Length: 148
Length: 103
Figure 1 (cartoon, chains in turn yellow, purple):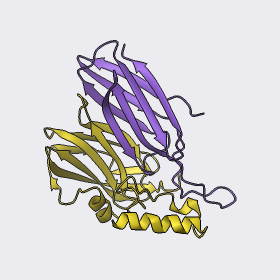
Figure 2 (tube, rainbow over the protein chains, first blue to last red):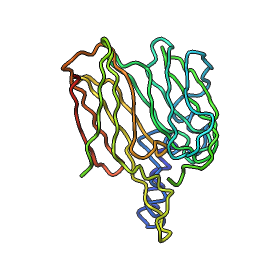
Figure 3 (cartoon, rainbow over the protein chains, first blue to last red):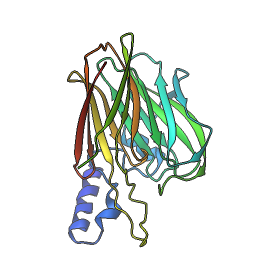
């Protein structure tokens, strides 16, 4: 309800020419969480609050990354029935980085490259058998990747 | 016209390792050009990977994915001759589809 109201208000502002499209592009009513500006609201938007830590959810990432524009990260879940993996970067302007859903024989593992605006905690949420699990790691960034 | 998606496949037993690289600037909307103007956000929002027309991986992406997005993943139950298809769609509605056959 709240989101619908927000987006219609946004549409009105856009229509009135009060906002430039470029500053509101991150508002994405159809993709919950991607427009959230802090970790707590991102987790709330994707219904991922209250996840439990699990030793079989493993993040491989550097402790220190020279360039925040391109940080390699590998996430592997050995938790049975893992259906999705979500990556969040706590201190990014928009913490929700990506959500991956696995089907038909795909193993719950993904390697990708992410941006970190500054040194930050990185969280991964796994959905498995109707439950939520979380793993965290800290990545220190020498040069921020926000503007890259 | 978007550049082709690069797809590499490597079969080990019945598990195929897939390496997918998309060519895209993934503009965050926070970068400024030489004149100090903000470069509008323009980035891949989602992609779908299918093996022989069965969806195996679906990704929703934000601007925190680096330019020229790379995804490595594995699928069990694959064999020589299987076809992997990848399609991405960006925030301007542009789309690109490419495929590779497991050798």
